[in-house]
Length: 157
Image (cartoon, rainbow, N blue to C red; front, side, top):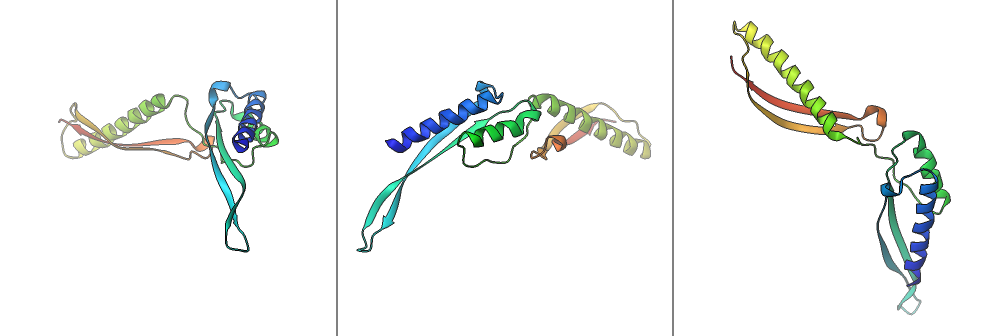
């Protein structure tokens, strides 16, 4: 089908432009092409096929934040017709998760120790830890990417 062939050629041009802009080939993916017929209603009430519309999505992982704008401009210049806002994420989310968990545990220990002292007790060992929630905040800008973690910690005394 001609629409699919034209779409494939567009995908190749945009992919080549992204590579030329420094995007690693392993970070470029194509989510598929949707081809839909374009129809019009004639004066006699019949429906006529007037063409086809092809839509594809290409995703690019840009690891150097200084090159995001360059990659977007290259894709648009190569024929991409729209773009989504960049989404920022962590390359190693487990390290951030562990750091957030450590900070939440330290905060829980500090608060529990203050409560124990106020009650005339000494804080004992950790008996249980439960992660109640965790979420990323600010994924639309790299400088505000935040992981929030809420934990429930049970201490002996």
